Image: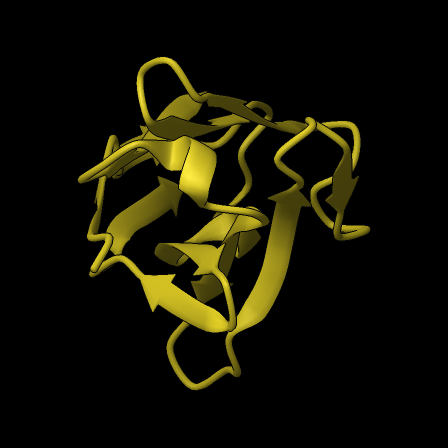
Length: 115
């Protein structure tokens, strides 16, 4: 079973940047779609961005133009570069990966943006 571990969250001021990482426990070539969701307190989990094994990416409207998703299969790692962060981006960010018909989730990393 693949395990995913996120890192890179933290506290940043509005306008700042963070890069989240999601490390897979084994060869990520076996993982098809990967992506990032986030969940703010009192809100539903929402998709931020996703990327296919070939590198095609889609973004939520709130992320487009500010966030960039990428994956390095040689390093078994998924990334989310987040720029121009705003307080509305404050949430727990989860990565996921689809292995066959199974979706594997990481434990989440907290992003807090202060105004």
